[in-house]
Length: 326
Image (spheres, rainbow, N blue to C red):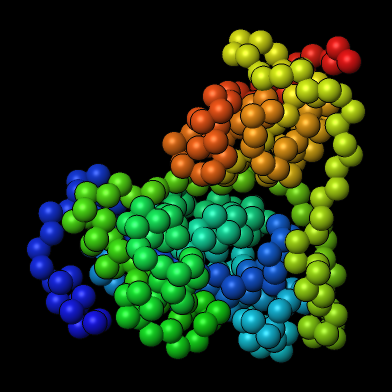
């Protein structure tokens, strides 16, 4: 089956002019899933406009803390001890990403981890657009049983050798992306490209380095709970264009923000707004920088007629929130 797909891939295809000229297929392994977790290895396969491999790059990264779930990624404290710090590889990493679309499986996670590492190093990742292969597989209508990388690989006959090893995961994704890209070009399918916004403001909690290896790591610490007080004000209804926000309004967020999401949500809460984790008919306003992204919140906002503003407009509105009538 793989041989047939390779033969088909060699046939000429009229490439849409709007398609990007190059891609950086990326995979990062991390100490966990939370916003204060760190990258411990990274791999990049650079591809040309047609998805052909140009070169590859891999590095381990010393996170200066407990490496997290070693049983998943296989990288112990001892293995990472002599690895470079992120700021030591930031320039080389950036050169691999420069002027290319970042491609990853669940790309929002990889991008957020990369953006935070560059923010910590007081640098900016040279990434302006990303493409999620999960979203692309949905656009193509691939008959996958689930959205795992192994399922995408199996569909295209790509053999995975070392799951959760950054270099092999990036290789597998690059090999699966090439026929996906060709199928999109042949079917004139719009690539689900999203804008990447570098962090301009962010917070991080200090995590002590675990001298005893990974024994002190607890899986329950992957995603620390954010417990905000319940909004004390009744919902006054939807936001109306040209008018101020009012305390009690339900605000939902979707997509990348230049100010870290937690900070935006904290500011909304402090202003007396209700931060909603999902979007419903009761939502007063959706804040997103990608109104055409097709996320579930954006789709529901269109269905329900929920007003939508971008991050900059929301920042202006936060300066003058009217008190509640209740």
